[in-house]
Length: 317
Ligand code: NAD
Ligand code: UDP
Image (cartoon, rainbow, N blue to C red; front, side, top):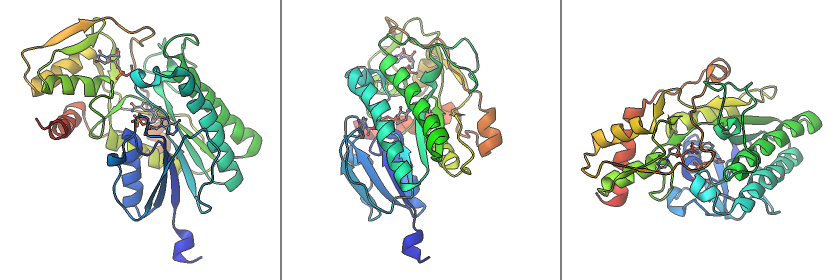
C-alpha cells in the first residue's frame, strides 16, 4: 500500500462547532485528511484552520449528497448542543439526531468504515442513579422542551446498536457530559460561557433556579482525547462509554469560581429554572478508565482560567 492510500481520511459532521473544531485540529495535527460537513447553524468558519488537509462541505447532515470515496472513518457530531439552540427548532433537532444518524450509518455501512456517535449525558434525563453508569436506562420526559434533543439522541443510539447487530457496522457510542473551553461562542447559551461573558461585561451572572443543581464539567482537550481513544478501539468495542469529568459542582459554586477570577460588583441574579432541567449530573467513568485508559486531567479551576483568557481576547476585554 502506498503512503497516499494509507492516509486516514475522517469525515467530521458538525466539525465547525465547538467540540468538532477542536477534534478537527487534533486530527489534522495527527496527519489525517479531514472533511467537515456542517450547516453552520451554531458552527463558525473561523473555528477551522486554513489547512491543506481540510475540506469543508456546507450542508445538512440529513441530506443526501456525495462524500469523498476514500473516507476511512466518521465522527458524527452534527447537532446543536445548547438548550437555547436545540429548542429553537425542535423538529429539526430531532431530524438532525435521528435522520442525521441514519444517513451517516448508511454511509458507514456502504463504505465498511467505523463510525462514532457523540451521544450525551442527556440520555439519563433527570437521573435517579447517581453518579450515572452506562447501565442506567435514564429518566427522560418524552414530551417536554428538552425532549427533541434527549429523545433524538436516545433514538440515534438505538440506530447505532441496531446497525451493529443487523449489518455488522463498527459503531462506537460515547455519552458526553458538559464540556467547556476555548472556542465556545459568546452567545452559545450554556452556563460556562454565559457566566464568563456576563462577568467580563460587568453583568450579573444569571443563575437559573436556586443554583443548587449540579453539573460535571469536562475541559475540551480531555474530551477530544477520549473521542479519539474510543474511535480507535477494536471493532468489538461499541460502548456506550461515558466521557466526562466526575468533579461535581452546583451552579452557585461555578458562579463563585468565576467571580473569584473576574471580580464583578453585579454579582448573581436568580431567574426561573427551565422545565425538565436535570437536578444533578455526574459521570461514572470506570468504563472509560478500564476500556480506554482515559480520564480527564484538567481541573475545573485550570480549565476556567484558559476559557476566561479566551473570552477576554474574543470580547476584547
Ligand atoms: P455546537 O453547537 O458548538 O456544534 C454543533 C455543530 O453541528 C455546529 O457546527 C452546527 O452548525 C452543526 N450542525 C447542527 N445541526 C446540523 C445539521 N443538521 N447538519 C449539519 N451540521 C449541523 O455543539 P458542541 O458542543 O460542539 O457539540 C458537538 C456534539 O457533541 C453534538 O452532537 C452534541 O450533542 C454533543 N455533546 C456536546 C456536549 C457539550 O457539553 N458540549 C455534551 C453532550 C453531547
Ligand atoms: N444555567 C444557569 N444559568 C445560565 C445558563 C444555564 O444557571 O445562564 C444552568 C441550567 O439551568 C442548568 C445548568 O446551568 O441547570 C447547565 O446548563 P447548560 O445549558 O450549560 O447545560 P445542560 O443543562 O444541557 O446540562
